[in-house]
Length: 394
Image 1 (cartoon, rainbow, N blue to C red):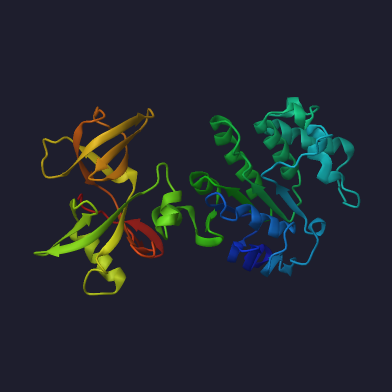
Image 2: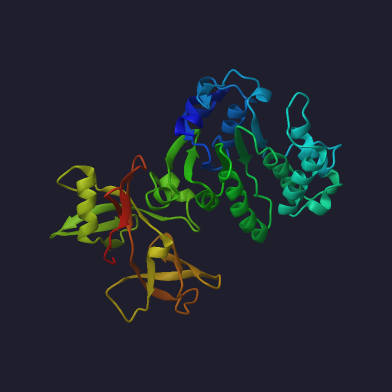
């Protein structure tokens, strides 16, 4: 199938009284593609799913599936497999019967015999590690088990026109979550139908989505590949959502003196900026001088280096806390009145209260102070591919 045979949303808007839940949302999902929709609580993620499923009627815009407008179709005619965030299990049906229920809807044709249907559902339950719970009622299940029962009910509908999963693994333990997100994605990609995976976890969205839509305040703040979202966040709002921990953001004013450009933080502390970063900033702003002076500087935790104070040609900071995770450590440091977090393989044995040196060893992203929109990133597009440009240590 070609891309126009998938799902296309055009200008979807939805309000509840004075609350604008969705505003001019445009989105397309190709057959066999998994689009992850992420955003903070209250961003409109579940409302978007309900509009697609026909459980909510949008105030404006169009919904096209397979090249046909479906906004006026009742939910039962849309052929959508939908995992609700609230699970919505039938309390009087067992796990097996809940999973089988969409395949037994009156009037719905199925090529599966009774034995084949039982085998199909049994394999799905086993994959989700709840095969031994097939005869239990929802009241006898834990929250994670209920979530997997609801997930099985959505996934057995392998002939659905579209599959939508609203937070499908949020209540599972870390080990099971890590295993299932890969298995579920492979299953979705093997189908010739579009799929939407909703999650508030930005890293989960990057790991499961062929493309990622970041929904903030009912609007698509950015829509692109996981690499584009990770390396080039479109705004400070997107940058705050993506990463573990997310990008460090420092409010500063740019100062130029004797050919050198520094970033002055709110408390007066100054950071020397490398010329290459400044040149890109000026070029991106389309001016011959620095844009406005006020910017927000973004630096990823992985790009902060901790240095012993024997090297005095660095900015100094105090260690606030240290969180070792085995293969890496998260170090929280005070930088004047600001706080930054470094993700490092070598914490150099630092302790809370110790003063250390810092340098920024990777890409620097600049955002407008007023709008929060990205001005320029430390990564640039070259020949259609994103390549990293070395940024001198600050």
